[in-house]
Image (cartoon, rainbow, N blue to C red):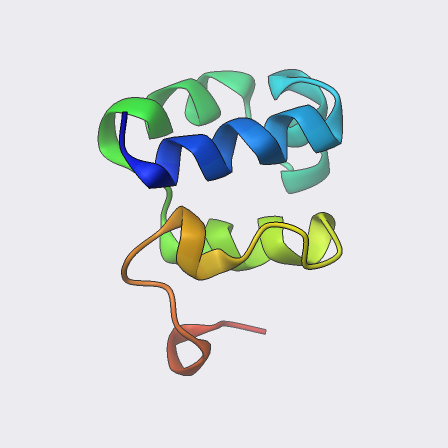
Length: 72
């Protein structure tokens, strides 16, 4: 399993479950399920970093996530 998937699993556990993480992100749970196949979008990776208080880094979720691409 890719390292990004482990970071996503940790983010889900911190939030409680996929549905709770989805609610915090303002998206559907199915979107999170698709990330296991297609990867986490950089903008969502930054949101997850904020939601988890920095416990999960955006760069751990998405190779393309860096501070320069972070959207406010």
